[in-house]
Image (cartoon, rainbow, N blue to C red; front, top):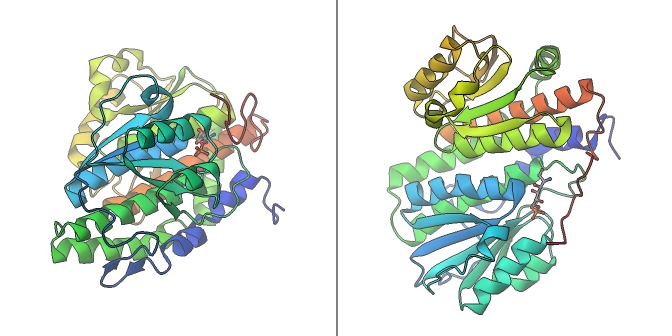
Length: 359
Ligand code: M6R
């Protein structure tokens, strides 16, 4: 049931605040993070993390790599499952192999997991479906508690995956005693504020509905961001292309000048993720360069930006992850509104299936 929403995807975007609280329940405590799914010695002997996933789950993995290295001080690299399988990777047994999957049935991710297990690696899955193939195949699993996701375009699964990975980064840091008390308190405090940052207000939704009409035509979109906002840019672009069939790319903002800026003109739509709490001045100068070449700029930020053609003001800027989740909602709703205007089937986009069980 859509419960009065036009589409399952819309309903799922609105559910994100609640499912985020559920995902944290019993896990985010004042004193730190607890996972009853993991034994106390689970991370013993682990010195590195490798994550494999596909699509949106791959994007949450990319964001996690920044968090694992920054918070837990553990080496983390990420690979697309279908690439990992055939590259004859060199694996060492001090590496924890993490798979991320909403469905738990994605063929490439499952096969990557089997390969890593064959090489003797310990495995952990982050999954939305209990008892799925990937969960059953893993040494341990953390469930994302997003509830059933029906929209083919993943929204709440991405949000809860990213939350679990952020919690896990802090957990690993605790286990390895690499998280200073002040940092622990700051992260926990930000986590507890996350559900607020995910609430969809009428003002925001109406604004995105109005401005979406500007973005139906043109050469395409660049979503740009830096640091963890780069994976979010990739995810924003994927959402838009999946349901609107418009060409969209996610790019690290600092890379634009190394080629893609050649595309800039007024029909190049740039969705700029400009968090106040992370490298603001750097991204600002990247966006200024695009604006100087006449690109149409839609800036998402809590800081007013004079050169923006459209400006979407965010509210929660005390921590990068709060800005991350609030901007995530903006990009999801923008994709939804553009798709609706184009008359597309938001929940069942052409050529796509919810679960990809073939290679
Ligand atoms: O179930 P999984 O998370 O393993 O699925 C991976 C991808 O197929 C999936 O994220 C896909 O990219 C979605 N359509 C994204 O919206």
